[in-house]
Length: 308
Image 1 (spheres, helix red, strand yellow):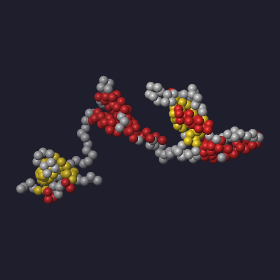
Image 2 (cartoon, helix red, strand yellow):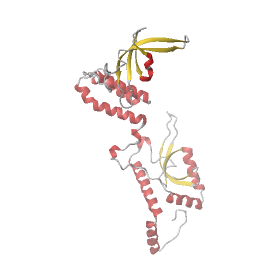
Image 3 (cartoon, helix red, strand yellow):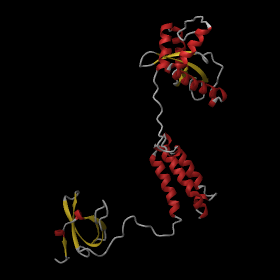
Image 4 (cartoon, one colour):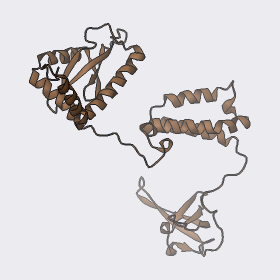
C-alpha cells in the first residue's frame, strides 16, 4: 500500500528492489529518522502517562489527522493521547498530535475533530503531496555549542529571571556551610529566616524581587564580618597636591528663589585619577556639608586663600 492510498501486488524481486531503492534514497533516510523519533516519543508517552494524559478513552485517540498552516499545504499526523477537561478550572480537553515531519502540538477538542474531518475530506492527490512534503521537508538542526563542555554551555534556563534565581540559589548553597560554622541567625531553626528566604526566592517573578533576596543574604553575611571594609580604590590622600588646604567658593542656583547661593568650602583630601576614573577632591563646606568634586567642579580662579 502506497502513502497516496494506491495499492499494487509486487513480485519478490520487485519488493527487494523497492526496498533497496528506499534505503538508498536521502529523503527516505530522513523520513525514517523522524519516524523513529516519533515512535520513541510515543513509546515514552505509553510507558508513563504524565499529569493525567490518557492513551485511550476517546474516539479521537489514534486517529490520523491533517492540519493546514499559513505556509499552505497540509501536514499529516496522529493523535497519540488526550487530557480530559478540568471542570474545576474550566479548561477544556486537549489532544496531543505528533506530525509526520516530527513536530508536535496540543489541540483543543474542536481543533482535533476538525483535523480528523479534514483528513477524511482530502483526496488521494492531496494526501500524497502532504506525505511527500513530510519526507523532503528540511528541518533546521538544533544548534549545539561544541566549543565548550556540556556543563559550561549556556542554556535557556541560565538566562533571565530563572537564570538569576538559579545563580542566587547556588551562591546561598555555597555559603551555607560557612554560615552554619559561624553560628549565623540565617540557619537558626526557630528564626526560620532561611526557610522564608528560600520561599521568597522561589516565588520571585521580577528582577527587583531577586535583588531584594540577594541584599537580605548579603546583610546576614555582613553581620559576621569582623575585619574592616576594603576600598576598591586607593585611599583618599591629604598630601602631594597644591590645592589641599585651599578654600573654594561654589555657586548653586536656587530655582524656587530665582537667585544664586554662594558657599565657601575647604579642600581636605583628594583621590588621584586611576584608569578611567578621574581625580576627585573632597571639600567641607562652612555649613558642615561635604561633597566630592571633579576637577571640572571648580577651577583655579575659584580657589582662594580665604582672605577677603
